[in-house]
Length: 177
Ligand SMILES: [Zn+2]
Image (cartoon, rainbow, N blue to C red):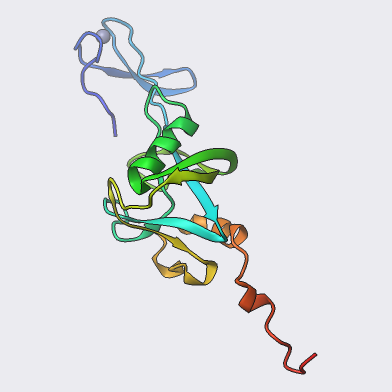
């Protein structure tokens, strides 16, 4: 599907032509070439006291499912400040964004692009469900609603980020030793 019918520079009707390695829309009048760029999104893996912060999505896609705080990077933003902004908007919390832990393809076929998953550290704020979110809360590993995760590719990172509770690892051995 094309984004444009008419040239965004001069309003002449666009044509298609093989240019720079693939077929692209271009303007036969002013020479404009449409390079369709991927969307960029970023998400935050925020772990505090061995709990992870999840939000319940209040918007499509995957409305009602649980996800990491995340959002699209605006044209004039860098990923880390964009993600700090999104976390604050969605959860009321202030975070510092750390290293990239993974890179995924965006799962929304209408918005193709790249999802950057960052580690983030809580530095302040007060937890509340904000923009586009119906709930925001901390989950211990055994509380995570695995069947209601919006994006299953997060599962591995949630399992990696959270230790099982002490009760699970230090259960007395059945032989009493
Ligand atoms: Zn044009």
